[in-house]
Length: 100
Figure 1 (cartoon, rainbow, N blue to C red):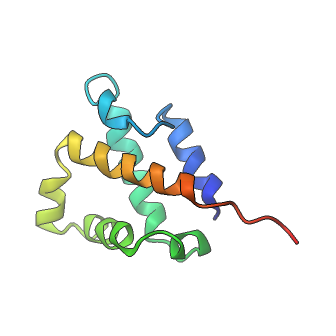
Figure 2 (cartoon, rainbow, N blue to C red; figure 1 turned 30 degrees about the vertical axis):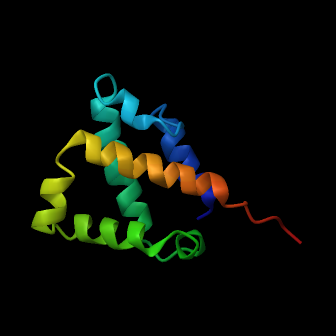
């Protein structure tokens, strides 16, 4: 998996922008679905995930393991949107690996 895998997920839901939180009223379902797909990808053992801050990974793992506190927190659309916004901003900082 590469950075593009995440970028493509954001594009799939037409949410490839860092101000996702501004769309919580108009793209609610898309934000909910994108968040779940992103969490699934974050817990996979892939090279790109070793470049992502561990807080994203541990949060995704807790969410996928049905941690009550985390799941209640992310029941709110705003919290999902800010998580996704932070992740997309971080992904923009990662340079894609170029073949040698």
